[in-house]
Length: 102
Image 1 (cartoon, rainbow, N blue to C red):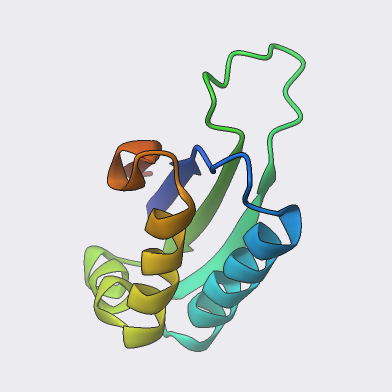
Image 2 (cartoon, rainbow, N blue to C red):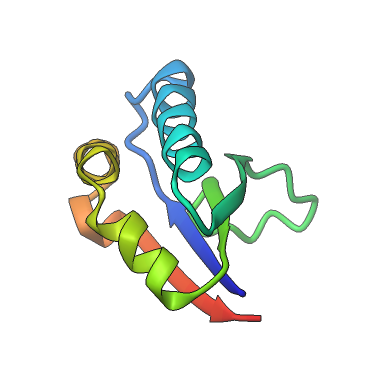
């Protein structure tokens, strides 16, 4: 299984409602694609408070690297990804992506 982890430093002016909208769209994409599922996302509530500005994140599990690639190539995913970039501090510099083979 591949665990796709995305952390974002959103611009202060990005409303929580916009973040929820983007995450809901990404969850819908994951739900409709074969081999994808388990979307979980939201704002950090860590008592450790060492997020270093990456206060929001989401995780999607994929059955295979091929399923992750299908998600990456999906046009709706690309449009939502562009919204993430547009709302992140510094664009792509405000986003971290980790893909773990677990």
